[in-house]
Image 1 (cartoon, helix red, strand yellow):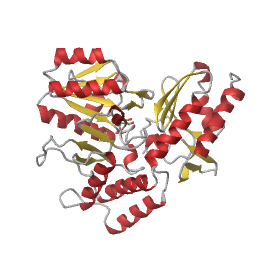
Image 2 (spheres, rainbow, N blue to C red):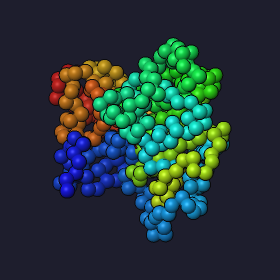
Image 3 (cartoon, helix red, strand yellow):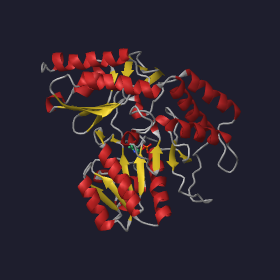
Image 4 (cartoon, rainbow, N blue to C red):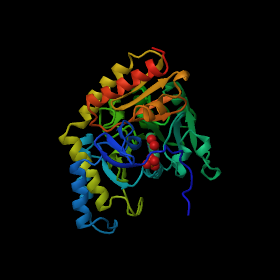
Length: 382
Ligand SMILES: Cc1ncc(COP(=O)(O)O)c(C=O)c1O
């Protein structure tokens, strides 16, 4: 049997990883500023994480949601406290798409309405509803097409207000990333998020904060939506939540009342997943990783803005987009193959930095120096 070939691959096999360093099968060392796509939050193979998962696996790895799993409550309490949403409720699942799928569904159960507002450049996942609210027709199969989604320009308060005037009685929810990831690291403005909050209140719609990539401390706050100073009704999360263990969740405001059978999943909230989730939050708290993301992120953004010949540096904390001019189209490949630094990308020519939240200033400097060499030596544009 062959692997269904949907991923363009770099010819590198990673066999070992520690902190922000990974090693290839040939022994080469790489600096990881990609974090396996914003997933590695507390660093690779963190000893506390490895121990907590190993201990859990030696006791019980999995049982279904038909029995009490106290680890779920422990995770909910810690998450509530660290995210500043102690009166919210937690539903656990296993991926970002599943989190968004459940959030959109819950919103519709709540207000009985069908339409969703999503934004240009948005990415919310690949399952049925999640892909329908994703702005990429190439990955929307005919069966996923629905008249229930209204796409609006990003950060356009006037268009948003008009959409509510026109369709307010049928709008169930508004879904928005605090910082668009796949869309090229575009920050939702604080005024725009506040406008979403007030229109959702006015029209009985649900504000869904997709925090799958920009959440969990990456932006320098627990949820990047927090910069706006208003609460969303539902926060969706995954990626950094398990530092590589597949876990997702939605944090749900108190006004949503559950009933048995309303939502469900086989794998969500299993023992091993909860142990991973708890280990991540414990390390984040003990090592002040949100503050580190803010400080090292600020440093990187400030230094990157000093470079010439780049269009723009965008982002917050350790979610950074370097929008490059066309002549630098090879920079990402050069960083990887010549300077051994993993980064992410977004179309058309944006380098995405999504490292572990405990990235050190020294590692940030290694990247800055390699980037400087690329601009000066490789392309002679400085
Ligand atoms: C903002 C956002 N939402 C949802 C998803 C989907 O998450 P998953 O791939 O875990 O289904 C992603 C994945 O990149 C994402 O960036």
